[in-house]
Length: 315
Length: 262
Image (cartoon, rainbow over all chains, first blue to last red; front, top):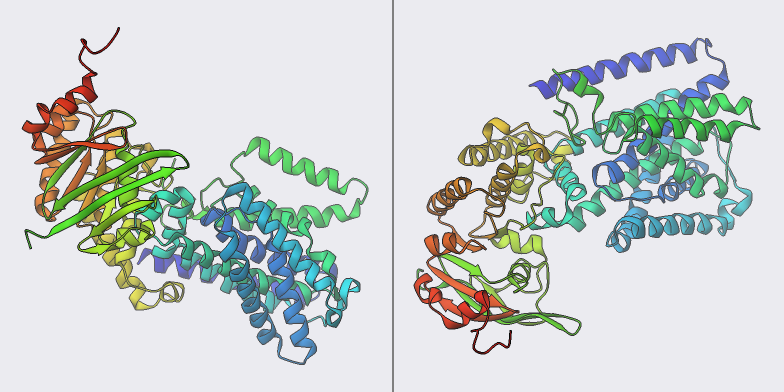
């Protein structure tokens, strides 16, 4: 019953945020630059949350996430170019990205820690290079994409992403993933098919990264493979680590914060990366476990037992 | 049924490169028995456990559980067949609550699919409810119910050991392997633990194989003992036979002084 309450609170909150956003953008109160930022924040949250599932919940340190972003971006861009409806293109982008996730995940998830990180980094780069060499999508010069992403479409995708990942996490399947993060040998000994769950989490994360990629592509007028290099992977990784590994709300907050910081800093191109780095260092010094640690924002409201990304009832 | 061995190990062994960690390990455990596996440090006791549970794949020999060959299966598959274990160095899911630790172990016995959880179908709610009830039931047996919302790593050491056994039980085993369950416990806690093991064994009709250092304890509760030394099985029999077995005395106390050269 409590969980049901939680769901309604979440739904109400989402509707309010959506309505406010729509009002600000629709009435022209926000200029296009800011409304674009707002959409960009939503896309970044989707990306952060999709990686949170892989790193924060399942504990698999993957840094090739931009590769799946690229797959989703290009597949959906190709489909809208073929005049398919945008939602279909987004979904297809996600599915193909999930498939790419399976292909990458099955061999590489045998590795652990640093080795997995390097392998996924490599796979991410391979995906990028593949797009550089396909003439159909314009190669290195990039591909023109119609501007289709709106506040509504982005927000609906975010809503679905959050619901799916929260529901997944807060079930026996999510617990299985968390147990792998906590102690893989023990999880295995308790009858958890660790490979299956690692790959499943990886593919699910890749799916939403693909959807995010579709939104990302259709929010700009052109996509190029250089948009999806390993620096993009690190951007997403920063959201997850900064928010606190294992905390969904942390990932969301960090994605909002860092997108705002980075957008604001575009006015200071010379010092931009310096300030961005300083912000990161300060947060890591004062909140070494990330902004939220492993806590969820809901654990501050005792009534709502929210998503269990780890510790809930700690101090 | 009673005569049919539950676990049959035939000449199992493993070598790591040139090192034979365990070799020629044979053991037969019948339904319902409580067997002890003892030996000095480094004798290969935990390695044998790892062979039985699939952490290591035996390089020689054969392991039959309930008449079926299990060597080569992954640990989770062996657990699902009905062997579950605890670890010598406690391996709890530290950041999870006590309740969630047990819930994880019950996972493989629950049936609702990933899709039903994502879509929050009725089968998800029914499945989760069943898991919660079962997990609470195990916590109750182990007197851990009042700790259910505590983070596992915050539990006192003795309770962590108990939680590990509760978790192993929740995986629904027929054969329970306990790796030094009383390690680090005081005599009173050890006594309680032994009573608990006797209780769950009866309650769940379990067969138990336990590794233990505390000779007094092993002698007290085990029906039969196997003794390992340097990766070899050196003796087996009732506690009485083991106590007087010359090879065992030698392994534990060293060779006779007359043979040695100081």
